[in-house]
Image (tube, rainbow, N blue to C red; front, side, top):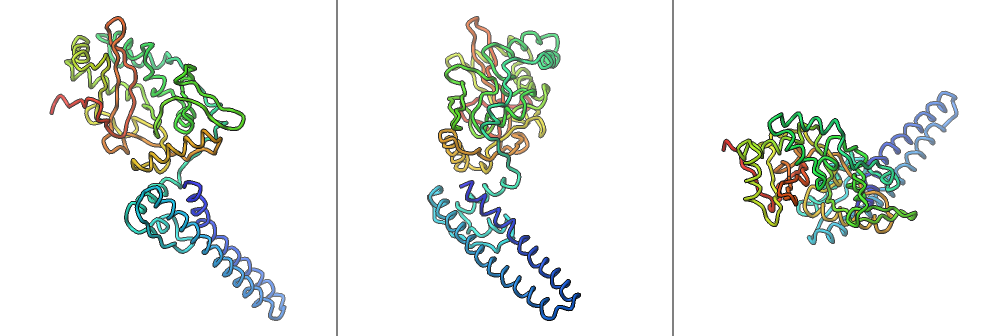
Length: 358
């Protein structure tokens, strides 16, 4: 679907300027011929050029009709709903292309895909292979975390965040480079470079990619240490501001030694700019996101080209944004923060933290 729309949009974008250039150059030749007083040549140049451009426009309009018909058939297959499309005049732009689809699931599906097409990026698998992997917590980040927590609870909370069983900082901390996030969402490459059976990653010479690393259609991070620590600070405040209160709360909420908590952006104090990352292009609905993930899987299995992705800010763009946290009880009976990441919408399996003032 992506390749089909790419071709159609490229045809729409380039054809009108091309024919305009043909006619403009013909007019220039005609002026030169007229100045040289070559009888009748000026008129012939313009006439022939216009006739040729008109014929080519007609042929390419037919090609646009083919793209429209193929897109309609594929959209009907993907959405399971009938779809009617009227091709727009070449050069009308993406909005007109989308408007050619009658309202309904098909229109919404195409609109979602086209909306991101102008700004999408693509990372080939060979570039992803070279993306940096880091399995350590930078000292600057650790120091920033310690300073944010303060003297009273700083050491204990730092140990909770940086526990060996956790990966919040390594996967979602401010130092994770863009290339690693792009490789994660595009090719499911673990930014930590872990080599266990669950996370190992391999690209073969034929371009196929093999991994069991788990990732949906979004890979994100917090942009600063301050932003990353906001959800945990909100949880600490919710539990009385003490470590004992936090531990008691986690123990009460635990299910098989695990606690999953969602902290809404307004409760955590998260704002646009506190998060960034990349998501699959045209994944604004559950259906398009599922199809994007399926196409990514096909590309990995067959050595295909990269899926389109776009930069995102989960807090700014999310329907119900916030941060998701997962805690696990350690063998010593303490608690470790396994992960903490920005998210566009709450997962119903997570406990929703309520504001202490509401």
